[in-house]
Amino acid sequence: MPNVYNVNEITTLLSGTIQKEDALQNVRVQGKVSVEGRSNVFFLKDEENKIRCFIPDGKVAKFKPLLKAGKIVIVKGNIDIFPIFSEYQIRVKDVQLPGINKASTVSRITQQLSGIIEETPELSEIQVQGKISGLAYPGGPSWDFRDVGNQRIRCFSNFNNAILADNGDEVRIQGKIEIYGPHSQYQITVEQVEHNDALCQCPGCDQCGNVPTCDRPREAANFESCATCLPRPPDELYELCPECYAISPDHETKVAEAVYAYFYELQVNGFSPYIHIRNAESDCKECQIQFGSRNGIADVVLADGNGSFAAIAECKGAGYVGHGIEQLKSYLSATDTRFGVFANTKNKSQWKFYENRGGNCIPEIDCSKFEAGVVKGITTRERFIDEIANLNGEIAGLENQKSELHTAIEQVSQTKHNLTERASNLTQQIERLENYKSGLHEEIYEKLDELVEKKMQRLERPLSDLKIELQKRGIKHWFKNLFSKENE
Image 1: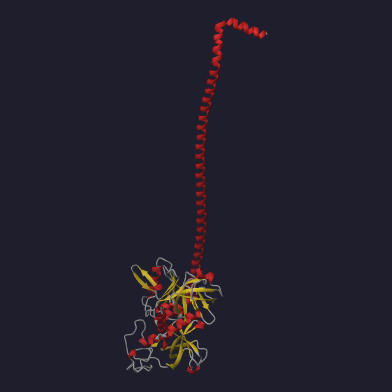
Image 2: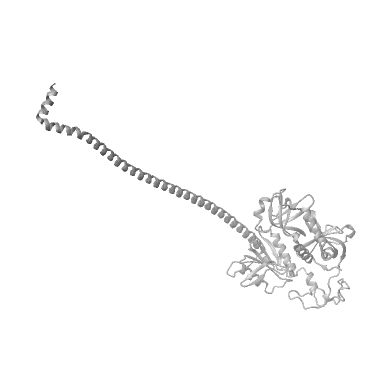
C-alpha cells in the first residue's frame, strides 16, 4: 500500500520531483501575456493551456514594459509550484520578445511536466488525508485539501466516486497527481474516497479524554497495535500526544502557515512572505538572520528581493510563549526591522504586534497600527526609491553635461594647439622673409656698387684724355677755345 501523506508532504514531494528535472529548469516558453491583478504575477497562454509566471521582487520594473495583455513574449525561468493555489508556475528570470532562437509553447511545456509526473511512481499512486474545503455541494466533483495552513491541493473526482461529505469533514483519498493545463494547476485525480470518522483516542492526552483504546483506522500490515497513540513524553509546547498535536489547529507549523497567509493577504508591494518549515529538507534562505558569527532562522518574514525585512514573525504552538517574545525582539534588533509579530495560535486576534523604535525600545502595538505602519513604511521606502531614481537621473544628466564640457574643453584645447602651430608657422615665415629681405638688400647694394664701378670705369678714359689735352695746350687755351665755341 502507498504511504499516507498530508498536503504539506505532497507539496514537498512534488516540488522536489520538479526541481530534480533539468528539463524543467531554465526553460524558454513562448505565449501570449494575460495580466490578472498582481504586478508580479501574469499568465502565459496559448490556445489550449496557460501557465502562471511569478516575477521575483526587484525585477518587476525591468519586465513591466513587455507585459502588456495580448503581447507575445518569451519567458525564461525555472518551473516550480505555488502551493497556496495548487498551481505550477515559472519563476521568471528573463522576459524577451520573440527572436530567432526557438522556445517551447505553453502546451508543450505542460505536456512535458505532465509526462514527468506520470512517470514518477511516488506521484502516480498516493493516499492523502485531509480536511475538505471549497466543496460547492455534497457529492460535488471537486474540492480542496487544506490540512496545513494555507497550502492546498485541488482534488477532482467523477460522480462515481462522489461522497456524501461537507466542508470540514476529514477524509482519506487515493489517486494520482495530474496536471490540469487550462488552469495551470496540479491536482489529485481521485480514484477512491473513505471517511475517517474516528479521531485519535489514546491514553495520556486531555483532548482524547484518556480513553484507553484507539479507534483510528490502521493498516494491519503496518500496525500490530496503535503504536503512535501510545503514551509518549508530551511535546514541550503542547500537552497533547503527537497524533492530536499534529491535527491540532494550533500546531506550530499551522500557526506559521496562518501568519504566512496573513502576510500574503497584506499585498505589500515589492515584498513577499517567506516561511521556514522545520520539517522541510532545507532551510528558507530568506528567513536567515545573522547574529554575529552565528545564524538564526525566523519562522515567517515579509521581505524584498534585497534581503530587507518589513516584518518578522516568531511562531509557537498551542498557546506556548516561552522565550518566543524575547527571541522575536532579538530578531528585530539584529536586523533593524521595524515591525514584528508573535503568534502562538491561528487566531489573529490573539497575536501580539510590536514596533522596533530603536535603542532596545520595542513596545507592543495594536494590529491596525501594525498594518498601517507596514504599508506606510513600504510606501515611504518606495518614495525614497523613487527619489533615489530621480537623483540617479539627475546625476546621469550631470555626468552627460560633464562629458559635454570635457568634449568642449578638448575642442578648445585642440583649437588652441592648432592656433599655436599656425602662429609658429607664421613666425617661421616672417623670419624667412626677413632673411630674404636682408639678402635682397645686400644683393642690391652689390649691384649698385658694380654699376657705379662700371660707370666710373667708363668715365676714367675721357677724363684721362681731357687731362692730357689740358696738359698739352694749357688750361687757358682750353677755356679760350671753349668760350669761342660757345660764341659761335
